Length: 172
Image (cartoon, rainbow, N blue to C red; front, side, top):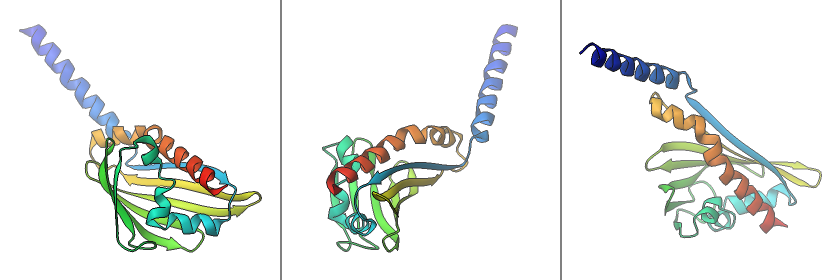
């Protein structure tokens, strides 16, 4: 009986320690990738604010060719967006805010993962445009969410890198 009590107490202490460590992880997550694209910022901006234009470099379609996309809202600009259903999840992406030829903010709502914000920023530079693809997400007070937050860079960063590569391919 004493061994069972000691083992149970040890397991409970380990679970409490792991939960405490998870709460020590950051609540806010930022993932970012950058690439030089040989095209003017205005052309990239115009492509990315368009529902159909965005689909030309959408990295999640590259990763999941069977991804189901349904466009909604205006053809481009604030309010344009799409619903997606695929192996990595279901949700929506909507153009939420624009700064002409400089940045596009997307509101992304994942059915299983909640909201996040993605931003494409365009900085004219020698040889084209430095494009930054970033995501910001609040992982909340859920310790499991915070553990996923610690893994977010490796999970999402590869898609952003692929999207920038796709953008470079269609823009050249």
